[in-house]
Each structure stands twice: as structure tokens, then as C-alpha cells.
Image 1 (cartoon, rainbow, N blue to C red):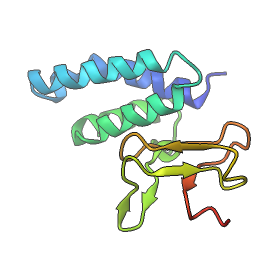
Image 2: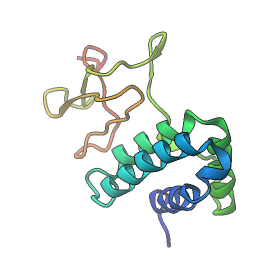
Image 3: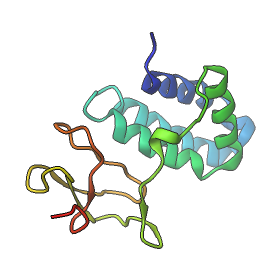
Length: 138
């Protein structure tokens, strides 16, 4: 059975061939290059979630492309597209790049900085989303 991540990757691959119909040629080329890079990153299981998060953030910048991806995902049985890859909300908006994130289970155990707005980070051992340092309940 195909995983949800694999369904997203397949949908993004299918979407790439439609970009020229959805966007102007220059914008389609830029997005195509970005998505290609993220799909290459997604070949590594350790980078897959980050690559998907970035790819979906890039797609969300273009409403027609976002809507077409949602159609493709629904056709593949994904009822709530993007739900698992939504950016983390911050106070008054999204968490800014450079914010130190920690594991809420054990803040000293796993720490990582957000590299881009909207990135979602997880603790590989505890399998929980990281939270901004200072909000971990310590």
C-alpha cells in the first residue's frame, strides 16, 4: 500500500507536467526547478518530510497550482490535502526562520533551527513536532 508521503510525491511529479498550462512560462520554469530539487531531496528518507514541506510551501504560493494539486490528491484518495504538511503557526503568524526548536518531551535531547518560514520539524526519537525553545514546558 502506498504511503501518504508517496501519494504526495507522485501527485507533485504529475503536477510538474502541468505547470506550463497553469502558470506563465517563466514562473512555470522557476517552480518546476524548485519542485525538481525538492523531489530529489525526498529520495532520502531523512530529508523527505522537509522536502515535502518545502515543495508544498512553494505550491501554495500559486493558487491555481495549489488547487490542481488538491484535485490530484483527492483523486488518489487523500481527503484532506496538506493537513499533515501545514506550516507551524507562530504568535501573530508563522514561526520565523532561525528560531531554535526543541523536543517538547526532552528539550535538551533534540534541537534544530528552522531554516525557512513554514518548516515543520520533528523529533526522530519521540516522533513529536518540535516547539520553539521556551515554549516546551520546561
